[in-house]
Length: 268
Image 1 (cartoon, rainbow, N blue to C red):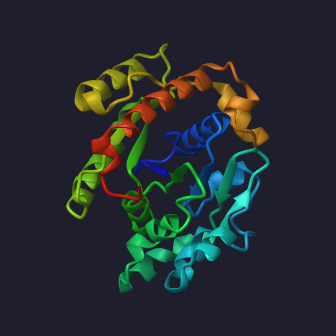
Image 2 (image 1 turned 180 degrees about the vertical axis):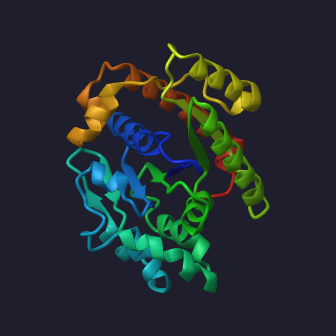
């Protein structure tokens, strides 16, 4: 089972859109997909019409009942979406209370990894959507995954968020057997603006081989797909953004196939 985390310490860069787009395209290829919402705001859950203030079982349940984790409990937290091959563990607003609970320790940073290990034969790929801040939720997502995708809006302030994210990875690497491989995903690229062009150039110059060679363009079809609650590839299959995400998925799967990456911590 592949486990990818989608994270950035800056909000509004396309994390949820990237999670939904890649998950939908994986399902299109026949893979069994599990999406995991770790953001208390629940954007990923809301995308599929699950409300974070109403769900009974959620990612919060895994933390709340961490001392009694079992395959059966994890399975109970999984819901089917309307789309074939795509399942979800929704978020609950109560996730926001975990930071103060984490002070007591007791393995709080490894809860998600333990939970996913219990269902590793049930899915082919897991994509984890994170909140835009460093805390116990992001630590769980980074500890549980084999690869990190960092969506970065092609504008100056987003570059600062990327810099903080890479610093976080350096810190996390000290507790892993191997450094966590990451891929920088330029998003919301607008070739009409010099700011976007310059930011993309800066990203590629600074992070070189870790940057996906493509970019996700500004595309109103992504917003329309979200409003409709439909994965972008089903809403508008031939849109520029969907074609970009198809390219990203192919590139990312090739990176995941490299032996050095598949052994880099996380759940195999």
